[in-house]
Length: 620
Image (cartoon, rainbow, N blue to C red; front, side, top):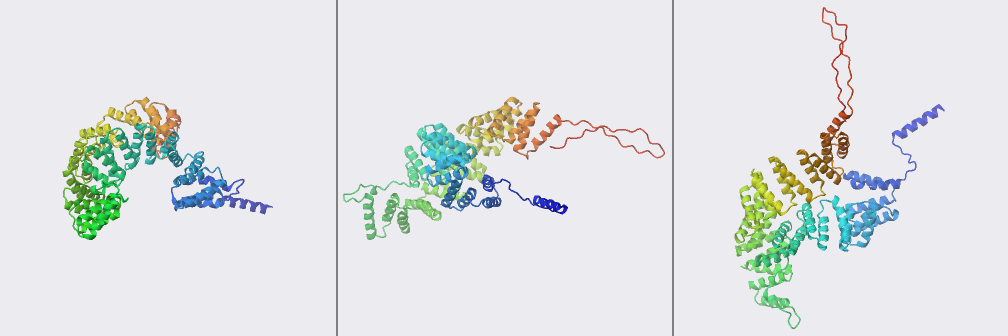
């Protein structure tokens, strides 16, 4: 009996030490579903694969296993296979919200909006994923259910703050419902998230045009062109503005880049009585003429123009190349050939064509500009400067090109030339926000804070939501100890973006510094309300509570700060100080050691005690 008992005890110890699980009442399939919820938070690829393998091994035929299979198929681009696996997961467990939501995303990508909205709704019933909200918003916006679409976009934007598509989507809703001010605000949020957002640039320009403000529209489109030089819609909008301004050359130039060129007069004939179009008739005539006079360069030039106007790029290139082969002296042949090469991304060939256009006519501004843009894009800044300078000799009133030059000089650390070019921009476009902000930065680097402040203020007067200008201006004011000015800027930032906890936190700091404690407390609380785990705001509020003697509130707030960020040392130190206040340890009297007797003398019989020492509290 004793031996049996010993074996039982040994067996129990082995089972405990080896981590054996008896699985009393556990459901492996249910556990695997719970593990699925952790996958989205795993960033380490090896750990992710291991977790997925455990889920499949735990319940191979369950809904979670099919979900994992769907994820893996998505990764390799097999979206149809992923859809089928998500469907199986949902069939096995109709309440599997994450499978429904992911299935809805794939349906939405395939344009199956009805099916997508059903599955996304099921997903959102349990999981408030910003991606589900975003997809649902797109579907509802397409169906013109604008209030619900706006709700879902706003929910998605709470987490996906860097997703310009969300803010562009909201802006389009506000535009459709005639709320232009709100649309402008959302487009600007899109640009803050993605400065090169073509949709935002076009959207803002369209609103300015509706308001009969072509100058601001032009400025916005130029920014869009800098971000996306090949975008046809931008070029066509620019062409329309220049046409109204009476600048036929630039209008034609941008029309050409937009894919529309005015047909040669010979091609603008009505259909003849036989039913052939004017272009077909002209082509027939030219083809016959070329057979009779194969060396006539002008025939090939004319043929190229007609093909290009008709959108037949390959035929146009061939015709222009024939003209070039015969040493055409018509600069438009080479300019058009360069544009066509650019459209086909044959950049080296485009460079050669633009150089030949300039050789044929050194005053061809468009060729200089296009060649400059290519050199700039390739990082050949000195050659870009040469071409832009030639363009400006012909069109000096071109602030966008002056701005490109200024940026090249600034990047090359040529401050004097950069300042000169920025000032040229401001001569023609004094309200250009980018130019004002960038020249202000140069003045600040030179230590000329007075001029820097002037231009930062100008940038903010043009665009109040220019966060870069505001931050730089605050930095200068901090150095100058101009606290009232800092307060005014931060209050304006809070008014512009009332849902941004960072702005409230910064304003709280300045109130704190100015000893306006009630304002500081209220502002910190607002930052925490917007972001409950805002460790910095919690720490600042706790510190302020200590400063004003509200220790119990300070303790509670600092503990929340430490929970939000366990590595925040200041919160730990402040908490230790509060604990010393709340729980002071009693002083302990310690007995002193007997003193050693000197040689030849009797030691004293009385015991002497040392000075009482207060022990420090242990670190928290």
